[in-house]
Image 1: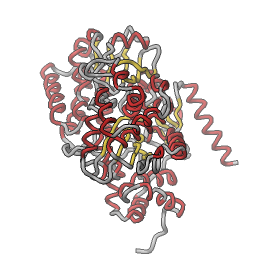
Image 2: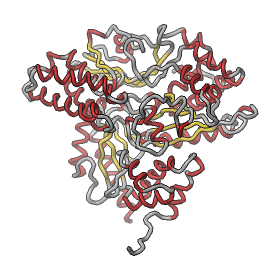
Image 3: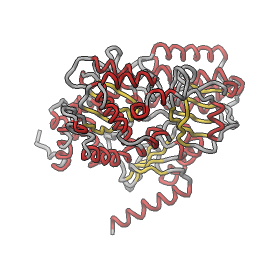
Length: 169
Length: 387
């Protein structure tokens, strides 16, 4: 087999290594490492699993075993630049969350779990976000958006479009 | 909130002024029980961890707040992070630990920067690190570890597995974490709120804490209230409060039912609103979801079952296979083609899940289904599939 180019950058590997002193052994670094990769690549493809395993001195199967348990890490394709999580839990669902999810699907033209064609947004369904006092709630990346309405969704999606134009200019 | 009235550092100061056995005795006298919902006596957990042999001991804060309808830990971590870290430090004094870990759910990533900043300030003020508060040889520090979107990791042995870099699957118990916890070391895992109350108890005394609550459920508890009520939010109320009293407080008097304890809890119908919220009656980790007169209880049961199917780790058969059968039953009830005989079968399946599942997730997965069938029979029977 011809040698393949490394997928993870030096910067990514260093960010993983930075966790080593915080943990008593390398196996315990698996989840932090997966978070780091996910942050850089938007997903954790199999090649990254092999490289993480190599770095941690583990078998690739051990890392893959852990990864496959957690819903947070995508493997097949990167997430969109922004991941929007719509809470489906009872308080949010009852106070308009179900309607908001339908509205977002329609507006973005995707089903939950899918990414828009322009790679901008991945729509996700979340179990309880722990923000039931602000139902219906959604998480945009790591930012909590409270008491959502269709109007607020409109403004949010428009702001994501604007930021894309800024990036291009 | 009570936490706002406690002088910062008073709890730790009091803990450092007495031998570890006295710290345990004070917590024991207060009757403090686990605020995550299971209600295990905190002093007993700490005492067992303290007595376990091992050079390395761990204090773990369970901040994997994932029970549907619970958000009080989010508020505590946001507004009273110092109390939580101080409580963990007191636990370290009590059991003789040098290492602390906060397991924070991925959905709360927005709290991480704040928590790291508070930890850093505590290190600078000699409240963490080496020779804490000038006491020779008392070293303790805390790391924040991120979860990755799994509800079952809130179960303490699954949480430990996850911390070790494994799949977050619950372990068989015994052995218990108090002697065989993180990487095989003695470990105490406590809820965010439990640590904060431990600080209050050390600062103000056991009698102060016990003045409220019931004999078996002493003290205050934070409640996360949401759903069909006028004033959702976090409430600091004495344990033993009746459902009716709580509803009056939050503006949900016309409720037809209240879900106490989240998806894993119980659905309390109106006729039981005089019952008390306490470990010996209706236990809760703090989740209170109010259902107004118009709510469809079948949809409530459906929402929770979909949740459990999503979150089941799939290890044991009763949970993995049982929950989808119950969900199928709900769909049959909705269409109006579930016979009474089959409904009885499903209830018996639910009871089997309660008895035979390996961990709390599977054991509690059928509870809402069972209580809706029991308490809202008229509402769920005789449907024809329409809305």
